[in-house]
Length: 258
Image 1 (tube, helix red, strand yellow):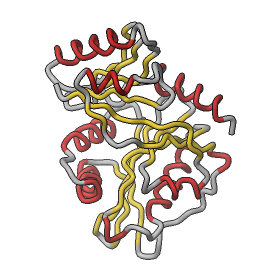
Image 2 (cartoon, rainbow, N blue to C red; image 1 turned 180 degrees about the horizontal axis):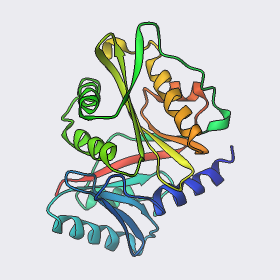
Image 3 (spheres, rainbow, N blue to C red; image 1 turned 45 degrees about the vertical axis):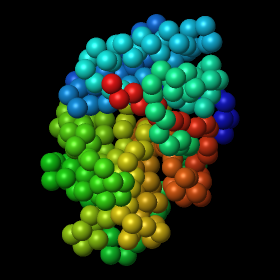
């Protein structure tokens, strides 16, 4: 893989040329910044920026004013290759809080082995309705902690919209949900995004996460995507490396509470 070329393509497709992630959301360019204004209870944030030492502080202040005017907080999604190099420090000085760093990992679908199945006794159920969304949210709360209200709202809106841009799946041991994940399929992009892959603690280490990655990658290949990308935690990065994913850069959410 030509890492520099794929990273540049990712920036063009998924950041500067980003599409709204749910019905009712909008993506707009404001000077040297591309941001999303989410639908009700949706994600608000900065997706891409082209800044330097002379323009960064003013751009950050403008986004704070803009999103504060909407009455809520937002996220600045900072990548390791973004400029200026000290943009993270500038965001912290403006009142943002950094969440844990993850690794942007990408694989070309033609290079992946996709014949991975879940372990014995576990089956994969496609999520298509409110009941399935509830199962995904249940897994999310057990695997990651916290409240899943925003996830429930956004996933249900995506599944019931007319854009067909999300695939979700839950792994069941009998009738008990033990793992879940989703995939976003931006129209016209070359990257499918794998999100939310999580397994409840008692079922980790059995190959379920690998099976969910392979399942979604097969769907992405069938729909004509060339790459799949993941914001990988330290737990999932070794698994993804063994599957054939390669690290391109880091990504850190900087959150402004408002």
